[in-house]
Image 1 (cartoon, rainbow, N blue to C red):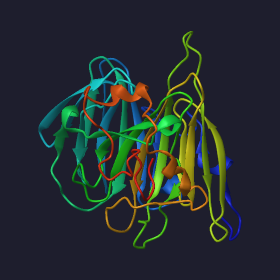
Image 2 (cartoon, helix red, strand yellow):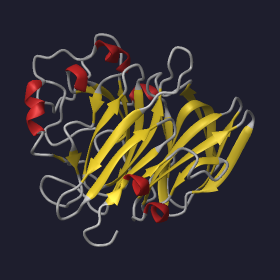
Image 3 (cartoon, helix red, strand yellow):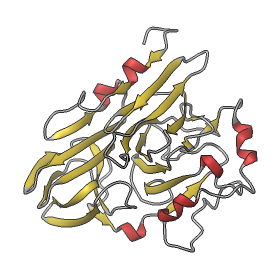
Image 4 (cartoon, rainbow, N blue to C red):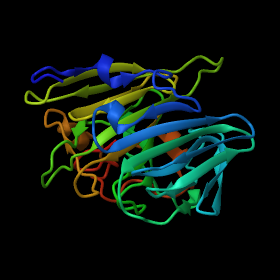
Length: 316
C-alpha cells in the first residue's frame, strides 16, 4: 500500500472462488498475499480422487474439513479419519515437512485444509490423533467461543507454522477484544494471519454469514469490515483484528493460520480502548452450546485465563 493509505476490505477480503485453482478450491500463497511467511490451500477431492504436490519451502498440515483421506509421504501412509464437517469437533491431521512430495487421496471425497509456513527444518512426517488435540473455551457469555489448538507452540512441534480453529456459536462474538500481533517486542510477536471461514446453514438450508473487522493504527492504517460467507478468506498483514461476529441463527467457524520471522510464539496485545471488556467475564457463565467442544465434565478453559476463559494478551 502507498504510505498512509489503508489497506481496505476490497484488497484483504477474498470471496470464495476468487482464489480457486482446481483441485485447490482456495490457494493463498505468500506472493498472492503480499507477504513472506503464511499460506493456506483448501483441496477439494471428488470420490476416489487424489492429488500429489510438493511442499517446496513450506511446512504444512493436511487437516480434514469434511471427509477422510490418506496422506502419503516418503513411503509412509497416514489414514486420517477426519470428520463430516467443521462443527463436529476436532479432527486428526498430518504434518508434512519442507521439501516433501505428498499425495492426498480420498475414497469418499471431501475438503482438506493445507495451512503452511515457510520453513527450513526437517521435522518428521507425522500424524496427530484427534484425541490428542487440545480443546478449550475462551471468553464468557456472548463472547464464549471454542478453540481447537492443532499446531500451536504449546501443543505441536513445528518450525514456524501456527494454526488453530475457532467455533463461535450463533450470535456470539470472538476475536474480542480486538487484538494485534504485528511487532516484535516483549508483548507481541510479528505474525501474518489468514482467517478462513465456514458457516452453519439454517434449518431450510439457508446460507449463513458473519462479519469480520480489521483496523490499524495511525502509523499503519488498515480498514476492513467484511461480510463473510462459506469459503471466504480475510488476510491480516497487521493491525487489530476482531470482532468476528456470528449472525444470530448461524454458527461461525474459522481456521487461523499464522507465521512470522521471529520466535514461534503467539503473543498479542488487546486494543487498550476495549481491553476492559475482559474484566466483565468472571462470574458470567460460558455459553452452554460449547459443551460439544470437548468431553463432558472436563474444564476446557485456558489455564492461563483471567477466570472467564480469556487470555490476558489477546485471543481468537
